[in-house]
Image (tube, rainbow, N blue to C red; front, side, top):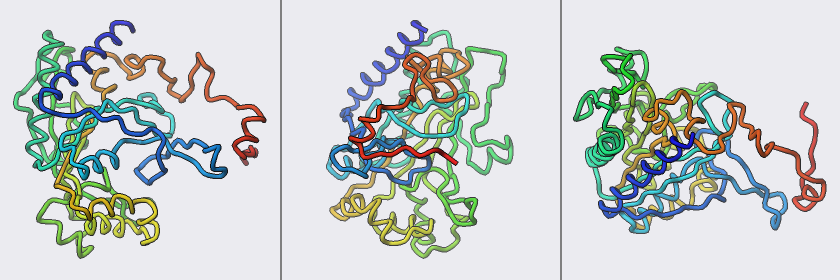
Length: 330
């Protein structure tokens, strides 16, 4: 475990050194924010000074990093803590770490090339015993990988018995929308992505919804998705259309995303980014079977902390201060 923690430190230092040399600025974004629909359940924090209201812990810094592009930061990154209240699963943690990155005035190729250089540098400098199967990394479309591997994160290693073989793969051309359980449309990856340029007219007219492809790109390693990003939707009217397609009424769009729409009206540059699942990437480099092995003081697969015995009840006095009453779940 100590070896894993020390290597984690070296990987993060390498990321910081390389991005600093590329003129990126590391910006810490808030951990107390507002609840927004981003795909998973939020962890909520009661606000004592404002009874009956709640902060939310960020599922990702997505909105903040796009607002930093509006503010003219141009090249941002963060080793970001993220929080998602998901159902228990062996390879999930309630809190995890991302390498979060955003750049202005870039195309998809710029971001993919930078991240490829970063990944190669980490492996070659810190894991010289490991071999990258193919450089430059191969690319496949979502349609191709689903037809060939029946998975959008295939393990393409030529020798799966070689523990030092790393097979990276870029997957591109994802569908923007898919049907949800209720028969409506939802995003496949991220509502803030831009559609591919030739499909923007379909989005604006809300036509051929199932055929719209997004600018999303995923990086896969040995059968695991270790990162994903896209060119973003920086036009307020186009971002509004995404939420309209998903059935959001105008008042909900304004309530949840009005701050972004207002900011984008001021002249946000075109921009794009990516987020790595840093714990998962380190797990694979270290040859561990689970992300818990590379996270200090990790939670169990059921989301519990056996050392601090959390989650745990709080005192009646704390509940009264927060104006919260506990009721038994039916």
